[in-house]
Image (cartoon, rainbow, N blue to C red; front, side):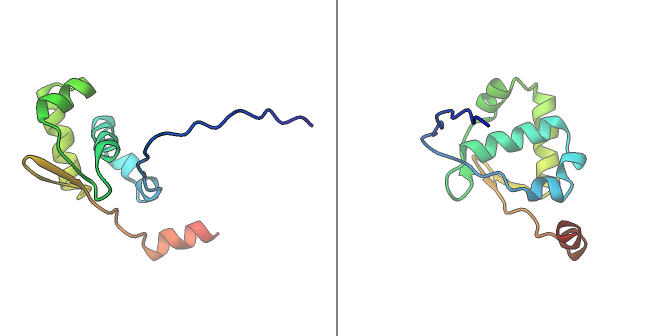
Length: 107
């Protein structure tokens, strides 16, 4: 059997998206717009999750209308995935899995 060895691509920097985002059900709870904004904030945040991008810049990059941006931001705040104290955003730690989730991982 032949394995196709492709060269690895290395980025200059990385962000981490926690698997708990899926396991805690956020993919089912959040709209695609909120998930897009979350991914953007994870990507641009520093090692502490802090970032500063203006609303206009974020809306231009993500191609969000004002209404879409406001709704996505509200979802992330209500879900406690981020904090926003203008002009800064912080991506927060995801909630720890409950015992039911842990047992489903182990089975």
